[in-house]
Image 1 (cartoon, rainbow, N blue to C red):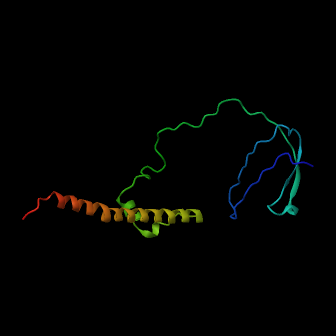
Image 2: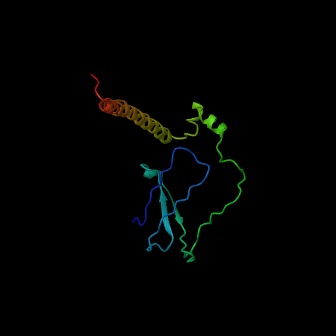
Image 3: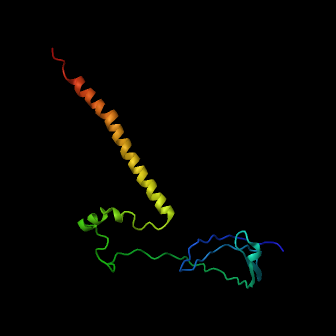
Length: 147
């Protein structure tokens, strides 16, 4: 028995409420029913096998175009407007971490905060150690020497 087509799907540890659809291309040599087996990674003894009926259907040749954008009034006019109230709400530190749902988002947020703090410190360092002494030098150098 040879393997004609194989693929792997990695499912997360969380149960999702919606189904996932995975589309893969089939080889043109597959033209009849096939015996398909699925098994978890590392456990070939836990495989489930069934005969699947193969039906070949040609795709429509028409050009499908996505829906065009159009201007209209949404269900919530003014939802995207930002005012003083929204600005004051975002100043609350408890709101900063709201909406981080995964470890990747948390790590990315921490990395971005670290990069911003580093950029601010480097800017302060350049201003205090390079620009201010340079400005002082030019101001003192341009003044005429008094005896």
